[in-house]
Length: 152
Image (cartoon, rainbow, N blue to C red):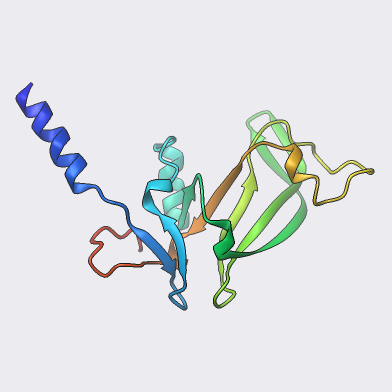
């Protein structure tokens, strides 16, 4: 029991937040390692890391230029469900304009396409919460002494 408490204390002391900035120009993006999506760490997490992407549950959207796009390509939502139209928002560095990542709309309630009466800007609001997929190669730690870096 004493070993368990010592191990837990050592883990909590060794973890600290790392803040990230743009890897190209150094612009502060206010991305914190504490906002990473760690709920689904497992096989999917390993695949995402190999692709060079880290998932965040929250970002400071004011630090990014956002460009909406609607793709018309088939994609799989799950093993037995697929969609044709996928809405996503490209997240660009407000400092230099380089691509940092994308924001997608999570949720099964999203329609396969926007309805004829609605505009594209209202379309994403009808779906679930946002998921942010940030490219690892587009980030650098804001502090030199952070020590924990997920690059390469």
